[in-house]
Image (cartoon, rainbow, N blue to C red):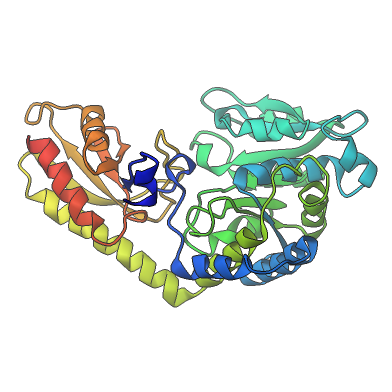
Amino acid sequence: MGIYEKLGVNTIINAVGNGTAIGGSIMRPEVFAAMEEASRSFVRLPELLDNAGRRVAELAGVEAAYITSGAAAGVTIAVAACMAGSDDAKVHQLPNTDGLKDEVIIQVMQRNYYELMIRLAGAKLIEVGLANHSYPWHVESAINEQTAAIVHFVAYSPSQDLPVESVIEIAHKHGLPVIVDAAAELPPFSNLRRYADMGADLTIFSGGKGLRGPQSSGLILGRKDLVEACAEHASPNHGVGRPMKVGKEEVIGLVTAVELFASEEFAQAELESYEERTAFIVEALSHTPGVVASRDTAPPSFLSDLSGAAPEGVPVAQVEWQEATIPKSNEEVRQELAEGSPAIIAALSQNGIILAPHTLQPGEDRIVAARVAHVLTR
């Protein structure tokens, strides 16, 4: 029996993308090997975090970097840094924000579960904009002497809200930092510096999604002074981020993942494998009566209800059908796939399902295509 079977846990085929609730990603063998080597020695963690951050920043092309226990932890730590900086007294005062700038602005259309990470630092959430649109004056009118930062969640940013470039322009006009949560916006590798190049002060990524590093890892990239402040609020120091501990193994694993991801040859080979898997699924399902399968590109912020994500630019297979020909709703099809053996997790689209290739393992594209065809024709 496998290690999951011993615990009575079934493995799944992930055709929806990288999501925490379904295991993040599959680490590359090189990452696992680096973590195993790291586990055999003791080190001073502050020194490791400092040197690892410099290496990641060098590879990404940004001022500074800090490794966290995940993107969610990164949001809390980044907000704490914007409120209290590196002042020891203020670091240890949080989450009590008396006497500190403690208001963080977020567009109302971006409200999501991860806003809790802002409040964990002690900040007050200030919502701006309408339910279906945001204008620059919405943000500007909310800025006052208590504003500490503006947070922009890329994955929850619809086309009707204020784009991140406009948010950065407004914030910097008032001398405010912008924190961009871009947890799942990888690949491509260039996205590691994309938001910093726009002017974002801190950008947060998950280490266990597109980077294929340890799931319990993440990155904060950006301004050197703010990144240094982040370190003061995080483990092994004793700020609000102390419980969000990242181990020496995860640090080494994430640095290794970034080094691999930085290789253009490596990244190109991965993208080609995504295209091949998508093409196979589309071709196989195109021969199924009543089914229309096509290659598409994942839209920005494409999310499933399991928080799986296909970053912008990653190919996906769109599968649609007419219920007059195939009398099953897309929810019924997804449910049948999830309850089969092996279980296949897919995402819903407006008129069908979406199959993401970047979390499929070799050979699983064939299993997915066959199972989808079977469910639609049964």
